Image (cartoon, one colour):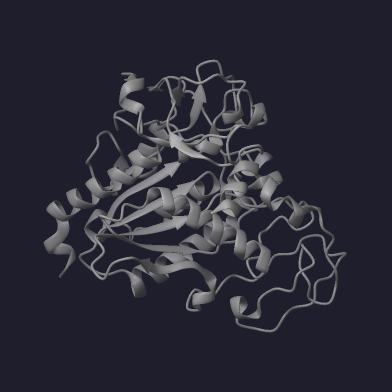
Length: 383
């Protein structure tokens, strides 16, 4: 686990869309060569593409890797991973932005370094989000995310289909439909989880996939760090679909999202006035505060020079409340602290910790919503 902890230590010092930007920086800074080698000088894994290793032209203005074939298990970070023969629900997960490479800004999931880092990040996240008493089955595809520099330059109020985000969005939908048609067990609720760019991919999946309904198994989507989505915009996007904004701890067929900042934080590329926000401790959308005593026990990574990197400790958050007018989740932490990656996304923007701050709460709430889905749809879903 020391290697994983070191990864989180470096990730916390970077920008977001990211959480592992520094970890993946060598991939961005290395040269790439012709003759079938990749952006980090490595040879793509032919098993991931199912074909021959293509030649890479160094002068090409934009290199787009081939779309993954999800019938090939090599194109999944995790496919049906579980610790039980009787899992209670399924999770479909999309990772956040995990690399920086301005010369090749679309992730090529055939490179072994990319594959290894995606797997480590996914393992780390689900080490926090998995409750062994209530087992789940995890499905996490490799998708062609846009790189970190592209994310910073993206207007998240516009149509993402016209940006380099479209490849991750397309892959997410292709992988999900494969999951739904070939891997999903009828009568079992499924939950979507994504952070940052992964949250955007899943939002577009929900918006453009009518097959996703509560009746089909959809229990909830935890879209932490989803940028620039207003409450009215979500209502409009899902009108008549049976999918809505979450407003409580056990409603189903819902979207749940929050962007975490300090009270002193200014404008940033994630929040927007009137943005939808739910408090991931109380699971309410009003501005009622959750006091420090009720936050204790929730999780996050604390980094100190006096302790091993990535030491996992109970939360020291002084409190948390939703601010519907700002469209943000306000936590009681100093803005100029290690928790906002030294202000690199704006002082007091805690984007890297949108999930980690509240890992225990999200973990427990998944179980609650899956059980609520079974009460409503379990019999119909099994038919």
